[in-house]
Length: 111
Length: 114
Picture 1 (tube, rainbow over the protein chains, first blue to last red):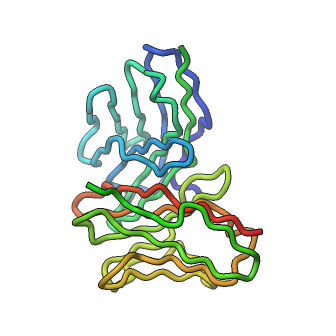
Picture 2: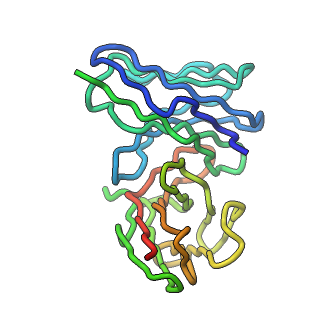
Picture 3: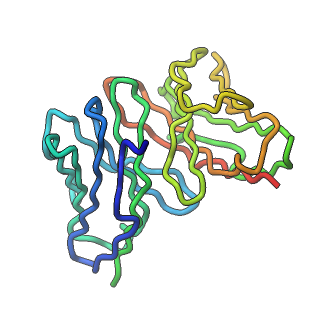
């Protein structure tokens, strides 16, 4: 039972354009959401998070939007840069603190 | 300013042997989490520990897997009698605990069972 879903396994975007990565969840008990970036042979790196009491959080080029009624969140990266090429994992947490991750979206930013 | 440290980075074991994976959390962090990433899959939660306590082991296989986080020293994930299906990347993460959920990950241990 996949409680967090990233339905796009890959995404290709031109440098300078906006990258939009999507994530859906089914468990209404989740109240905190995080995005991680992962390069090959490295551990995931925390990127940005959002609490369920908010619908938007911004940090530099990265913005996360949360639509609780649709149980959907998205990560916007603008402008996209070649160094953003990585696998992005969406994670969700409830009161137990453990994170439930999606299967990841591989972002390729092309020149 | 060391981050989460894991060793070894790569571990090769024959079927039936034991694997021991170590994790030292970030300074000031007292919560440790273990995750497993199978090939072509996402990260799956295994166990959540605080010093000397297992808080949540709902993701741990019922047999052969155990974890500890002693008062002194690193957290250990132990896999007894490894099988080929145990081949995966094992990631440790640490956090200060609630109310922050941000977990900081180590580089992982890639276990290969031959």
